[in-house]
Each structure stands twice: as structure tokens, then as C-alpha cells.
Length: 325
Image (cartoon, rainbow, N blue to C red; front, top):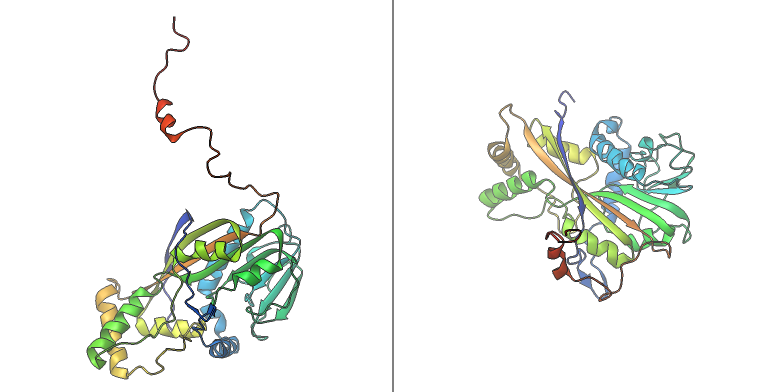
């Protein structure tokens, strides 16, 4: 291609957000609703893995992978054995070293996607992330960096050793709001209604509840906003396809009429275009950290066990006569 994405403009971190709201998965007959076509997602990944120029679409995962690695380095310990879920091209592991992670199991759903690019002793395994074949209490660290079809956090918890840590990153929230809005406006105007053309995303307000519900303790959730500039809307969609992130929801509409696409591109440029002619695409990256419970971890005190009233705190700032004659 003779065009390149212009730059990753901003990376805004809002750390320490912890939420406790409703669950992301809609329940039906006691289980999670099957929103995505997993066979289609596998085919998308396999197709992308076969691309000769596939590396040029890795820029977002590489950037986010380095941010996940930073969070691993923030934990002051060495991990004898780590599991990278769905990280076939080592987007996280390439930023780590064997002083922090001594041994690594690298997994992906596609054999072609598995690529070891790290100094850490690594074993590559082809596996579906929703059916992990590992024994319970095996790994000291589990991490991932990807869009996730279903949050199988219970599986991630089970393969961790007690006091092991889970660190993950996924797109969510208001990701690609510019593209979604442009497609909806154009399709409504040209076809009298609109349908979903982008996969649904997890909201940051749901992650705390999801992690806690899966059994993790000492939770941390934070958000990065990454904005990438492209020549136009068509290039945004081309890169999404090259990343293997095309819509795979069951309720997707497979066909977009040409005049609707042209109208959407015009709306995109008119509403969000920059003075230099480029258009932005915003990716909201959700990060999560959770620990498998262990007796050595700090625990909250029992309700009602406080020895000082909050009403007494106002007295701290008052001057006292102690020490005066």
C-alpha cells in the first residue's frame, strides 16, 4: 500500500478506576448468550495470518502489548511460568525479559499465527482460549492483549496458582465511535434504517463486576485512549480487516451498498476530519488486573469494626491547647 497510517496521536491513561456495575453478558437459560460466531472469527484470524504483509497491521497490538508489559514490570516479583492467551505474535512477550518471566507458554487459535519473538524460553500451543487444556494452579501469570469474544475469566482464574496475577487488555467502551456514527447516519439516510456493522464492545463500567464475579481479588481497571489518523474511512476499514477485527456478531449485516459506503465516508470526513485531510479513529483500550485469592493477601476488615468515627476527622485540623501554659 502506498498510504500509511499517520500517527498514534494520544495515549491517555486514567489509572485506578474500579467499577461495580451490571454484567456484560446477557443471561439465557442459566448461561451466557452466544453473541459471536466463533468459527467466523477463527477464519478471520487464519486469513490474516496468511497475509504476506500482515505485519503492517500489528501497530495497535504492538503498542498495547508494550503497555501490558509495563504493568507486568510494575509488579515487584519474578514469574517462573506465564501464559500468553491468544498472543501468537508475541505482542506482549517481546517487551518482557527472562529476569521477569522465566518461562512462557504462548497460545493462539491459528498455527500460522504462532511466532516466537522473545528471549524467554517459550513453548507454543495451538488452543482455543475458551477451552484451555492446562491443569488448575499451573501458572504464576496469565496475560492477554486482544479483542475478546467472551470474557472466560473463570478459566483464566482456574489455571492460575494461588496469589497468581491476571493482566489483560482489550478494546471496549467507545471504540470506533466515529465509524459507527458515520455508518449509522449514512445507512439511515440512504436505506431508511441501520444495522450493526461493528462488533459490540465491553463497557469499562462492567469490568470490575466481571472480575469480581469470576473470583479475582485486589482488582484494578484502567483505560487508555489511542487515536490513530488515517487518510479516510476506507483505510480505517481496510486496517480493521487486516487486523482480523471485522464484525463477527451473529446479527451482523454482511452487505453494505456502495452508495451507503460513499455517503458514510463523506459524513466521516465532514464530522471528524482534520485540517490536513486525515480522519481519526479512536480505540478505547481497557486494562484489567486481578489476583487469585490467597491467605497471604490483605483482606478488608469486617464491617462495623472501625474504632474511629468519620465525624471525628474534622477535629484533626482544629488547633489544640496541648503544651501551652
